[in-house]
Each structure stands twice: as structure tokens, then as C-alpha cells.
Image (tube, rainbow, N blue to C red; front, side, top):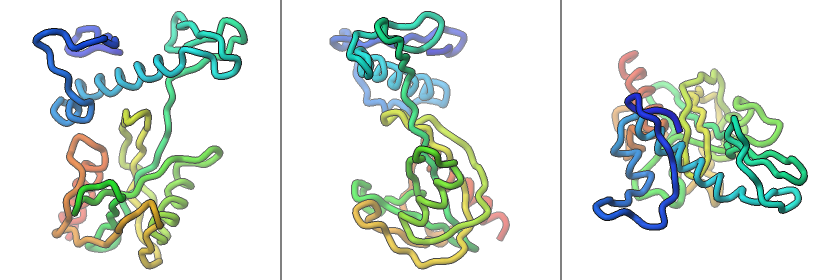
Length: 215
């Protein structure tokens, strides 16, 4: 999986929790762990799930084999090669002077809001995805996209790519079934937002801090 404090890290699936050990949900572990440990845990979870779900070839059904020299499973019959799945997704924090646009999905806790997010479609650039998803989810148009950062998000295999985007025009119209509520929030009166272990938490806090500093 990589190294941590100069020690090699490995991932394996256990039939039961060893005596004296305690099983911790991945999300909880990532919240409690520091950056490197959380990253290793997330990588391990994704690789183990890929290994479990690709034991047979998706083309011909033959049992696959681990490939030497790279992280891949190969079909000995048709030679189809499977790699760990990654699903790129954009995240966008839309802003205008003094305010940021935050939304909540139906499964969020009450008063919990976050930046907009959505998966990239085939043949689509990340920037095209930002414009499309923002328009679909809240009905506004944006400009001046600025890359913020990225984060592997192992729930189950997303790669989040975050941007800030300046509002151009449009009134908020939440997408039915996807967005329960979306609002403009004053930067000094935010609702509950994601914790810092997620890139959404960093994106919102850092952008708001920059806006507050600029006056």
C-alpha cells in the first residue's frame, strides 16, 4: 500500500477481528487519523474492494490472476486486464461577494450543507463537468473556475477534484431528488459544514477565510 514512518504497509482481509483489537469504520478512522495514515487506510479499502469484486473476468467470466509488477488482475483466457476503479468527480464552491452557495442532499443531517459535487461523464472535461453539474443541481451559471485541490475519497472509489467558481447569473433552483435545499450563506454565518478531514471542509473554510481577509 505504501510506507508509513518508513515502514511498509500491507492490506489484508481478516475473517474475524483478532483478540484485543477493535474494528473501526473507515470514515471514523479517517476522521481520527492524521493525513498519511488516513490516506493509507483509504487506499487499502479501495484496493481490497477491487480485489474482491474482480475475481472473475468481466468479459468472459474466467477467474482472474494477480499481475506481477503492477496492481492489476489479468484474465488468463482473453488477457483482459482490470485495474482498481477510480471515479473522477468534481466539487465546486460557488461564490459571489460576501456569500457562498451551499447545498444539502436528502441524506445529510439537518442544518448540514456542503459544496456542490457530481461525477464526470464519459468524454467530459473536469471544467465542463463543473458547468454542467452546477447548472443541473442549482440552476445557476458560473465563470472563473479555479482549481483548489484533489482528494482520494474511498466511498467507494471516487477521486474528488475541487474548484471555486464565481457566480454569473441565475436564481437557485434545487434539482428535484438530488438537492433538498440550496442557499446563499453569508461568509460570517455558515451552517454546519463538512469536517476538515474531507476536501469539502478545507475548500469551504479556506475560501471563506480568503474572502474574509479580503474584506
